[in-house]
Image (cartoon, rainbow, N blue to C red):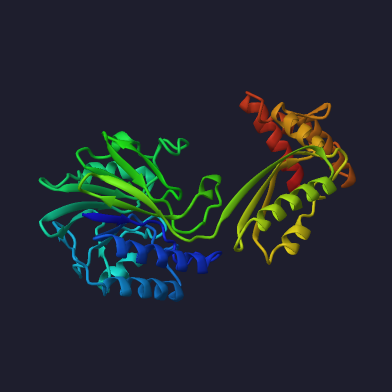
Length: 401
């Protein structure tokens, strides 16, 4: 049996709404033409409460798919309800997650009989004499997913190819949060593991079996890894082989420019040259993100670099975003380093604070009325009695005003 894996459509994504709709349509139509069934590991919609326009777009897409003369059919085995036997199985992603007891947007499509929501349940796809089981776990909070897996204890169906489909961050791929599940936390015994949520296509091995992420069908995150093609995965369960099927999608380019003590004019010229080069090589309007890193010329003021001329001049030819968060001024970099060392210039931060506060009290004619040094010593002073006395003296002064 051939099964298409299409994920993270993000219908209704506002920045590139037209791309989201067109590319979701192309991916699903191509998948339906090539496969016996489609499985969707989350985030059909971009928002928990999609706008009516986004819901209408999704209804239009899935209505046409549900009308196709499928050679395969699907049914829920165990808990859950199916309102159709159309072999399109989906789970809600993190963008569709709602509070307990409230229906999510995916449920609308399931209730309309356009697909089968297999959240926390198993569905079996049948085509001729072949059966494929798919267990689905919708996107839930990372701190609860391990507990939920223990509670559900999902098992493969005996005698048939079994897929575990979910929508979560994986620690081995994103090693910055210990709440993320690891490969070892996933239930054993399945023939294939399919994950959504991550927007670039990836593959690995889990419990000795294939682990696949098809990536998103539309650009939403502007990360370097998303510069590749968008598309879906076509799986052949007979030999568990698979291939990535690209779709027509807007090209994304991530550019990193390094500077050292550079003038604003040089930075602007370099940035413009790179943007023009990308545009000249693009057949359609690309998405460009430029990362500026390093240092600007000494003596410049923070905020002196105005990048609007570039985004305005080339805005008709490309979607341009310029990140200058890692571009700094030497003096500012020195001060930041000083903050890490608890100093700014030749003064300790505490002494600088005392100086500022004393100057302000003098302006207000309150000099010597408050023990400024005592106040600044509060955080370092181990003696509670001295802390309390300093606070009491300050409060007495303020109450007397």
